Length: 304
Image (tube, rainbow, N blue to C red; front, side, top):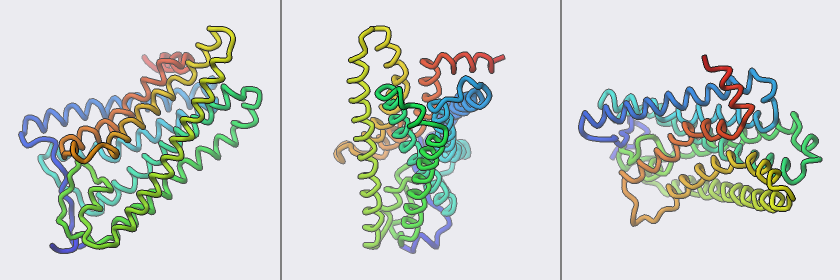
């Protein structure tokens, strides 16, 4: 096979072979995409316009909405276009851009969720020091660190992956350009360099996971020490949306990449990829608006 670097495109995995099912998938994903645009767009507008929502947690929520919009917009429009026009092709440059932006937004979101767990930890366990530990400057620095780490990670993975000689064809067993699928096409031992980067990123992700778990263990211990039931309920309700978002994000990603090879198949991998890529950006605005009374009031004012 010729080097894939000389080819002009990759072939993505199709959602279905029948034209009717392709159009059905297009309509379904169009609805989900519009819901994600509407929900995250409303949160961005509400947080930016309502002075009551200018708190550290709402600042991080604004960043989360931006990352959700970027994540779902990186992959879903191309998948919908392929389903609508009955094609599987994506250009080599388009695939590289998709990998870059997907890893950037996805990694930044995970880092941001870790930062948000720290915010909840300080708010519940060290309320007297909240203003000094999570002030406006600290919030900006933590958000910049989340975005910056995601961008650095994305540049390293993209540059390394697309410098590999690829000679196993140009067909990817996924509906978007996923790093492991591209590495599979490599015919050189140089792919071990990218595997090493993936392992390093996985170790950092595990460290973030441990930090989130430890933070919530401390939070639950602090909440259980609150004497009144109403106080415990109020404290826990401020953490519930973030905990739900983190659980949805981590559980789908862990199932995707840690499931046994014996149950792996292109169809199952595609379904699970939809779960961790498409569902969270559409559902996150709903999760956060259910428990945040100020956010609900601000959203009501935006609605005609």
